[in-house]
Length: 177
Image 1 (cartoon, rainbow, N blue to C red):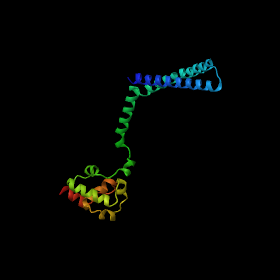
Image 2: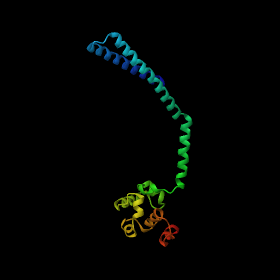
Image 3: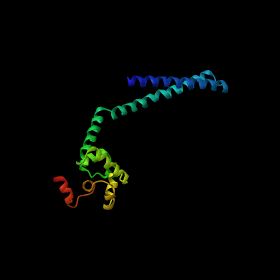
Image 4: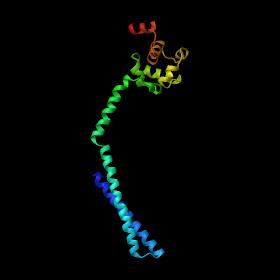
């Protein structure tokens, strides 16, 4: 159907351009005293030019068919799946641009109700920590000003910064009662 539509549009454009150029040559013949046989010759010349145009279009369509063939489609799909499977293994440098949202908080934090997480998210946004990268830049004094409980602040800090020390005793007490 697409090929038929393409050919139909092409033929219509081809005929329109051919007749339009023929009309121009007749007008030109009337102005410059060119005989009608000369205008017919110009029409044939233009038609020959447009005859070779479909050959290039056909070559282009063959190239597009190869490019969008199922083989290349599946190859691209497998390549993208392979890259997505490697993503957790890669060092996530784009994490700096990851916006802090409730889904991220829920995946990071195991404590607290949904309402509390919304409140913590609001505190983070008001504390000018819009992205995970911003959280990494916060120093200890800023963490205390966020209005988030210290145990939760510590958990967030442990998740967004490389863990070089053991968790604080407060965090262990909160986790194990």
